[in-house]
Length: 264
Image (cartoon, rainbow, N blue to C red; front, side, top):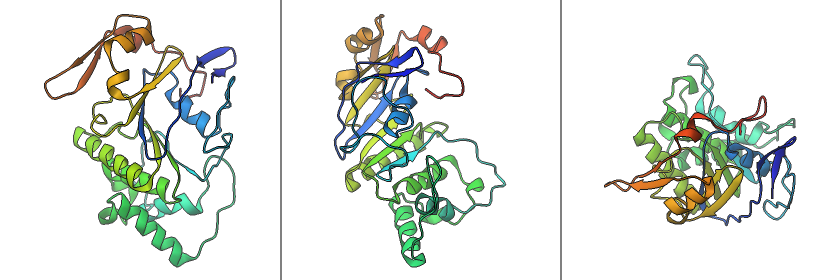
């Protein structure tokens, strides 16, 4: 499978399968095409070559079987929307394009909102205004909004960004528990694999127009990344088990260009 924006190939030669219940991190430098992969699965960007099926069918916009948490934007601290109302949007709102809200019995709706909030451990602050919540609290409610429709796939775009180390670990373990308990396939886009290492099943690494997939210990190695980047790369592990990739300074300084108004 390949994806292009006009004449520019974002990546090509991609071949992978994600099983129900698997927790997969999508890694790679800025502009390599990590968010593009999510957009392809959501039916927002068509493959330019090859075949892709999502839950046995071609991707389509607004697929209710996919829960999606996009990159988080700053929240106005004056926003008075309650956390419970935010979560409710996962059922009565509309996503990924126009559509009419679905009507549901109010008691059933309230029960499903409460269940989703409880599943992410957010009951204690769900009735607070979202503008007053911490980054970790808001991320839990966004997860609740994404899972309230009982999706089979959960796509998370940079959910650990702007969280402190403690909350990164908490959210990573929470997502892993949701993947296992709900038998959902989870793809989580991230820059840093270390908060995720204890709970990951697989890694998809996107770089220089190519995609590779495997267990973290298979993909994040000196040999594998050096071949992927076609440049000397060294993977180091410290005494706490954290991984560090050395040799990508030029890549970080000169990320791939994205098309205008796109997030790659």
